[in-house]
Amino acid sequence: MTGRHRGRPTRRLPRRRGVAYICRADSRQTRTGTMSSTNSDLQARREAAVPRGVASATAIHAARAENAELWDVEGRRYIDFAGGIAVLNVGHRHPRVMEAVRRQAELFTHTAFQVAPYESYIALAERLNGLAPFPGPAKTILFSTGAEATENAVKIARAATGRSGVVAFTGAFHGRSLLASALTGKVRPYKAPFGSMPAGVYHVPFPAGEVTVEDSLKALDFLFAADIDPAQVAAIIIEPVQGEGGFRPTPAALLRALRAVCDTHGIVLIADEVQTGFARTGRLFGIELSGVAPDLVCIAKSLGGGFPLSGVIGRAALMDAVGPGGLGGTYAGAPIACAAALAVLDVIAEEGLVERANAIGALIRDRLEGMRGRRGLTPISAPRGPGAMIGFDILEGPDGPVRVGGAAAICARAAERGLILLSCGIQGETVRILVPLTAPDSLIEEGLAVIEQALAL
Image 1 (tube, rainbow, N blue to C red):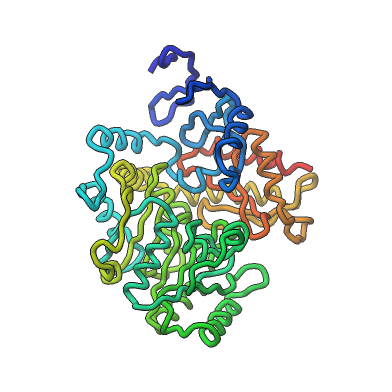
Image 2: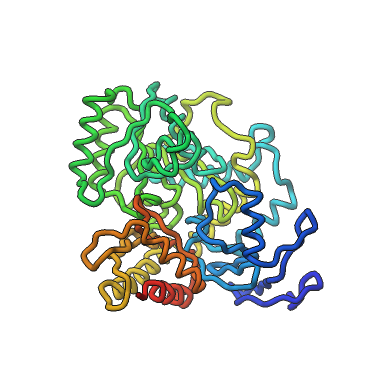
């Protein structure tokens, strides 16, 4: 490529894997013929046109991105430690993914799998079945969003067991559709304005803070004694690492105990791997760290490499419990997304991203540990999370407690300095790091230096 594109001046971006890319930082024409060249212009248009119910972590309006860097409409460069909320484990616009998308787009973009099925969906299902984190035959169905994955996992479990009850955990996040909101273990902002939630969903405390694994299991026993017979429970759903709940790993002891409970009572164990999946935790699936085999696995986010795709991988006998027509969706398993996902799985394997996640995690933890307790910096907790799924809390003092809402200010300061970070946690106390696993060490070090600057008092 030359330094010009469509007759307009351009800037070259850093080379990646031998390919040169260009970025045009000027404004682009909209369908209405108006032009917006600044973040403030677009923010004003957004506020007039888009409902406030969909929030944005920053007022950075993207123009272009490559690997772990993003440029806004004003041409400013940002290091991306958010990865589109864990969607970009292989980075923005990985060349292998983009080439697979190009090839598929030249053939067809949509038929609806329920109308005219296609090989890429079948090939992806075969590939995922071979990677399933449980023994025995597996089958996979594809959807578009993480909420679709969790809802359909519940539907499959209910059909397979003939039961309706579902147990989830406080602090969990399973999506924003109505049933997914019911599964989510946080009232605000996910439930409060929306009236009654679907029936049959129960929550027990997640082991965090002063709550132990024993406390969680005792609460489960109380639930079975007071509210619902375990013989009426279809599924228990849990994240191997809570995402929105604060990047809190689920103790292996709890997962082992839940597996035993499910085996005793004929309950389906669902692992929600929407955020933890596809190498982020230093394993392909986060549940593998515990040695526990689930029955159903919800997948999404980084599977599609930036294209909307989700699914459920499950034990074949469970997956076949639903009759024809009971599952699906018009855009579910879209051809372009399937092509992208097959390329994503190739990249993870060929570039060693499972191992790379552990190396990145070690680098980040080491730097964050060096910031703990340092004079002149905002107090932070010890970093936590497996692989490259790292979170840390903002504290009121060196020995705590957490600073309620404290992460948002740090993320805002980081954005001002050219780093995109996200907050999470039940009290908005946690900063989370989801840098693409393809990011070079030098870029990660640069981003960590910005975090240190943002923590400066």
